[in-house]
Length: 460
View 1 (cartoon, helix red, strand yellow):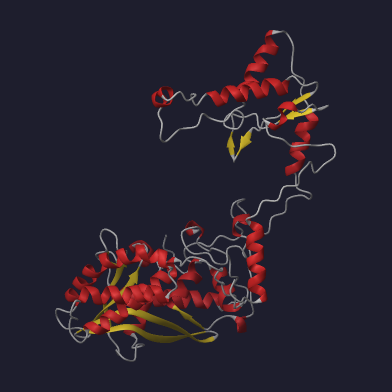
View 2: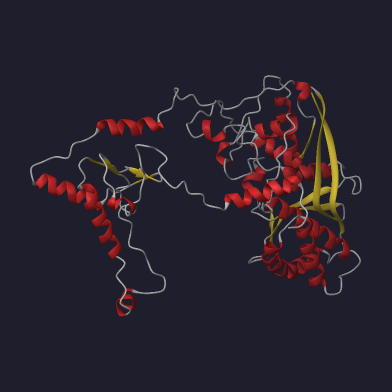
């Protein structure tokens, strides 16, 4: 081995030991032995317990041979698959003739109802025909029930409702964090007030967020190169940008096989996208940062944004946001549940982007990039009759009302104020909020209606 540190040596030894089976060489209990059906054939015991008497366990289902059909097995002189069931029947009959036998079967297995073994049905039929009964053992059932009985009465944790002091509450948020404040205030409380960060697990595969960041970086670099005119071999240029961004994000060589194929699919669509959006020579701003502030009872509150792309044409602008997953629906945008683009438009209209100045938002567009079929698509964030400027102003008014409510020291940060979206969005702090404990049993506590969630009374 090459020279290793003490920690590396410990990890190496632990991994080798983990992969090495160690057999005890005998029973671990002086009065009890747990054996398989074949091992138990020659064992004589005062009391024999036959467990696992469910279909699929004892007997197991006849195996499916992916290579040899039944006629082929017969032609080769191989036994049929059902022969193993016959051997299971032999094992059961031999074990069931012991002096004292307890037969066990589970009513549920793997969370689903189970079917009692055919050996039990056959035995019950024979005993009933002989005018006898199989003695029940209620104490055995009581033991089984006791295994799952809680030591103390069940008292689930309530839905968390932290009320931090006003001086601890944030006075500046990004537009993406506003959406989290509307949907899951507790997550924002954990992130911004408790300052808790999610740590990546060792050797964890690159998640969707890292991939999305890489695609954003590739679009930014490629767009800047397009400012000087379409590059020679633009397809290869974009593929190189995206592949390098993914490698920098930590994508493994094995994963890069798939990602290179997706990059090759995306590149022609991206080139067409750039050509379409540059036909009238707009001013294009990529990854532009902006902010604006407004007053509440507790002082100024600042919202910030980093726009993926803003295209300015004759004092009006189109704001574009790139997504690798499904973008929010038009209903979620117009009711205020997903205010990222509308608030970005409000910052733009207020002149919050210094490099751009005060410009009226004309269109709000989501650009979804997947690399599949189709490799990308553009969709408006608003319904056909939606006005981007009006919706941006309305979003800012809603935000002012929401922040004023959180300026009340009694206003809590509940977990999932819009519970209909639980499970559809990232919940990095759901385990701290004990989400599945209080939510599954229905102990939701204070439910937030549309107005409470900052929706202006709209329905999600």
